[in-house]
Image 1: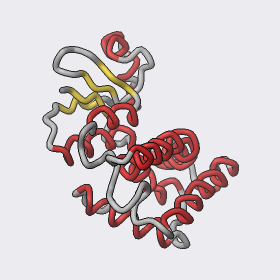
Image 2 (image 1 turned 90 degrees about the vertical axis):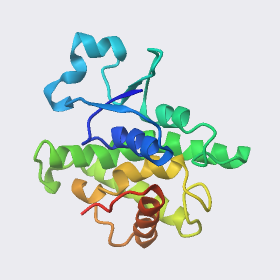
Image 3 (image 1 turned 30 degrees about the vertical axis):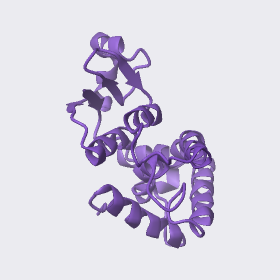
Image 4 (image 1 turned 180 degrees about the horizontal axis):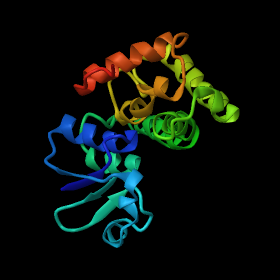
Length: 196
């Protein structure tokens, strides 16, 4: 399997982390999104949306969208709860991450890290919604070790990708004690080194 990805992207790292955790063999093909490498004719044949991550299976089939990819790769593993309702709760977090978390936390991080914007120049609405997402996670994690129960799941993989680097987007996790605890536990469960 080939993974076309940018190691600066949390969405791409989700796929790498799942493969590493499950010991799935892959070849990483680095795509630099800042150099428009997702817009080449060759890449657009793999993914007409021109986005990473994209995986290419051994038989030539391709799959895009980070949460769809990790959902496919982790089938039958302990990263997906066996109980149908717990599995649906995991999916609930996966959908929420792409709609209510990533557009704020990841976008603010991108603007600060890659566009060089100071935190004072960020869109206040994006910052407000980013803190709203972190607050929701804080509330939930006050009563749950992981997002979809007592063991790590794809919900944690998905939300960890940008939450662990939220500070790079100007977000202060000082008041989010449960989120910080969860970051450490999720990193340990997945065998990841903590972010500096």
